Amino acid sequence: MYNHKKNGFLGIIITVIILIILVIVTNMETSKLYNFENVISKIILPVQNVITYLQNKISGNTTFFADMDQLKQENQELKEKNSQLEQQLRELEIIKAENETLKQYQALAEKYQSYKTIPAYVINRDITNYSKILVINVGKDDGVEENMTVIADEGLVGNIISVTSNTAKVQTIVDSASSTSALTSSTRDSMVCKGTIDGTSTLKATYIAIDSNIIEGDSVETSGLGGIYPKGIHIGKVTKVTEGKNKIDKTVEVETAVNFDRLETVLIITNHN
Image 1: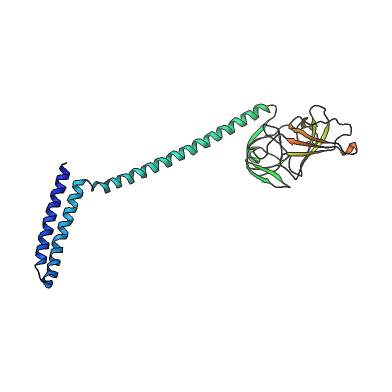
Image 2: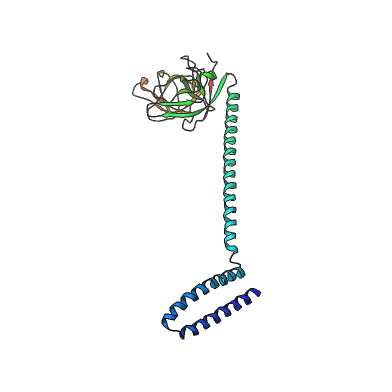
C-alpha cells in the first residue's frame, strides 16, 4: 500500500514538470527552443534516471539481477553435485559387475573343483564366417599354456592356441577349423564334432558308426580322445539326425551348450593331462 502511494506521488511530480516544460516551450522561438531542449535534456535525463532508479527500488526490481546471479550459482552447484552423483553411480555399477564376475568364477570353480583352473574373462572377439577366436585376459605370466582346455559354466568353450605375457587366444569349438572328439551320453556313440561356417552355436558331427543309435535330444560330451580335452566335459545336445540313402551317410547336428555371443567369464584347466 505504501509503495503504491509513493509511485503515485512520483507520477504526479513528473506530470507537473512535463506540463511546465510544455508551457515554456510553446512560448519560445525556434532558435531558442533548440538551445532550450539541449539544456532541458541535460537536466531531465539525470532526473529521469534517478526517478527510474527510485521506482525500481520501491517496487523491488533491483533485486532481480541479484536473484539471477544467485540462481546461476545454485544451478552450477547442482550441476556439480549431479556430476558427482553420476560418477558415484558409475563406480557402483563397476563394483556390481566385478562382484557378479567373482560370483561366476566361484560357481565355475566349485563345479569343476576336480581340476586346477585359472579364471579369466573375454576381452576381445574375432568372429567371422571362418574364424571364431576369443581373446582372454590371462597369459604366460598367469601359467597359461597352449592346448589348455577352456570351459564355461555351461560346458566346453575351446582350447588355447597362442599366448602372450598377459593374454591368450582361444579357438572355440564352433571355429570352422576345430574338431572335438565326442560321445553321446546315453548311447555312448562316438563322433567328431566340427565347427561350421554358418553359425556360432551349431556343430556338425562326422565319423559316426554305421550301427549308431543317436537320437535328437541326446546330450553330447567330450570323449577324452585326442589329447586336448579331458573326458566328460559337456558340449551340447543333438538337435537333428538325418538318415541318408546309405547308413554311412547319416548326419548329426549338435547345438552347443555355451552361448558364445554372450560369453564373458571362463576357466582354463591346467592339470588334466
